[in-house]
Image (tube, rainbow, N blue to C red; front, side, top):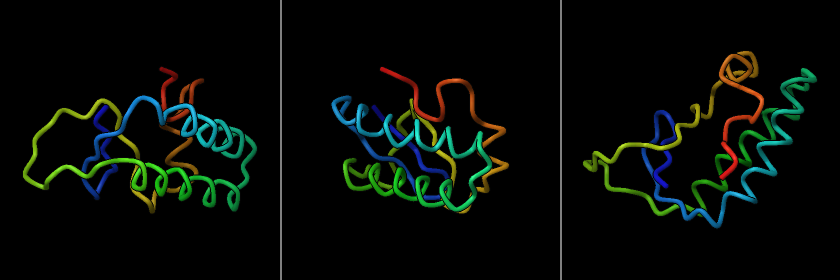
Length: 93
């Protein structure tokens, strides 16, 4: 799956990593719903870091369609809240 982090670029991520990422996404969803700003920031940064660590970066000139788009690192809790649905940022595969 191709994942884009807004403002950073794209990575290719194996489907096998999504169980781990969904755990972080579930934590993030709970923190956003509970208004836990510190928890949100910590978990959101951990989620983006894991995507970067587990993914294989695509060249900057690659124009692959992104199947998942994640907000930029500096996105606020309120902005993420507006993007969320019942599944969070990452759909269950």
